[in-house]
Length: 420
Image 1: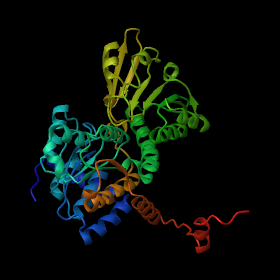
Image 2: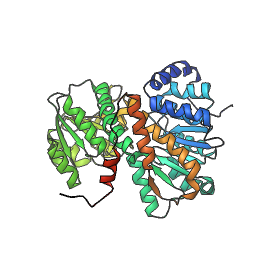
Image 3: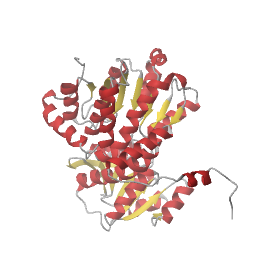
Image 4: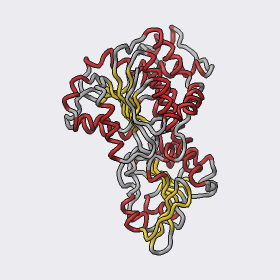
């Protein structure tokens, strides 16, 4: 197979291959699925198009789908998350069509999405829903051939549910993000570790004793708050949802409006999936040296245009730090251009947690290839048997055994006659 591709440097394939293999050693569930796929070839004849972070973990997902018989084409879901050596290895060693360059501009980003659509995918894999929305805006003639798709992120699921509500969604999407084995682990433990990793790598500033503000107490926000607390930071949560705010308070965190938190913050990290969470009024009250980072999918959570408008001067003191000097001399430090700090300033989630997320992806693709034409164009949750299978395989890989119900216990749970 001779793929078409657009990557930074094919000569990076050697180091990329070594790092893909390193990640594979931490992904036993996906490896079990790949072994089955190699024997049974359940995806034979399928064309898959993915707009995902081009990382070592994604490479192992692509190889698993290919082992099942699928033809795979990939583009980047974020301009700063591509690992160029991984892209090179996928092209050289696997014949996969990859369209991704780290640091690509917006025009190239969308040109790469269109290149994946040129491969006529029958199933789409998305990380933020840019592939799906571009298909619906520009390539409506291709929609009838698409059996279904998957979405990996909270942000993307929000967009897709809005499309479904408007009657604009043209084919079924399974929200892999909402699988229990995804959001309980990937969003919490993966984001918790990788977001802190990105912040620490970018700044090398001690977290202990600092006021660390987390905007949003969803699963990602919970993970970030947990890990920041473990570093000794004084964690503050800001929320708009009463139940999550209450949960944060009962988890032992301070909860307050962002405008109040911004006055004392040393770090502010967004994890909401919404736009302009950190905005002009917040910038005007922040302390000198406040660090701003985003862990949401798109770079809209921090209003960068408003920050630019307030700045009298800009500096670039470290690789992933842009420092804005305001008229009164205060310096506000934006990490990774406001993009996903865990991928733009570090390496993203550890492979062991992506193992479960991408196992869900692989099994969901198999499910859609078998059942997609029977589904209406809505957003679905991952079928429970798939979610449970991933959990069982992960426990098996970790060498952990669990109990099973006796027949008596099963009968008791299925009945209503017995009481006191």
